[in-house]
Amino acid sequence: MNFGLALFAQAQPEGQPSWSGYVPFILMGVVMFLFLRMMSKQKREQQNLLSRLKKNDKVVTSGGIIGVVMAIKEGEDEVTLRVDDTSGTRIRVLKSSIVKVTPAEDESSQAS
Image (cartoon, rainbow, N blue to C red; front, side, top):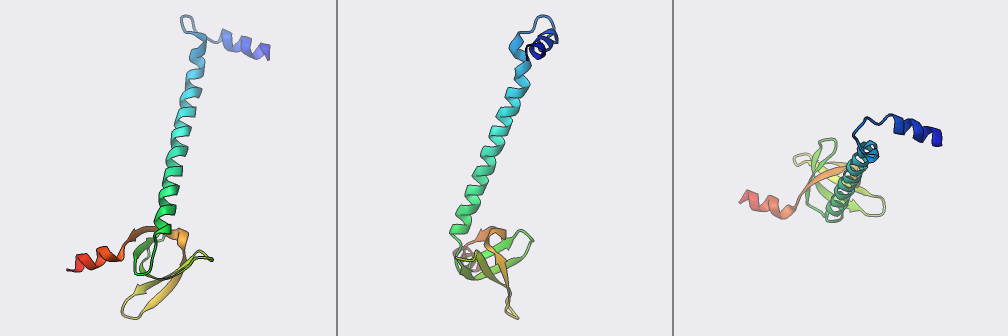
């Protein structure tokens, strides 16, 4: 172990403090911390979005399917969407695949 530290100390250019070799590692740690914090914030927002999901909300799935929520199965994490108004075509998707929700109130106010 002392041999490795001796090599590290010899690799330091003249005029630089010995702690300057740790700066890249500190910066990588800060970047990783900020990245993980951002990811947890996005996950919280997604969970909040899905918890407010209700019947007649217009949604977009991660696969790009646009539909209207017809039924929500809470225990099974499943949502039934109506994807075609004329034929009444319905599909079942996982709640976790929903990425965007437009509340029913917004849709009715836009029609006016």
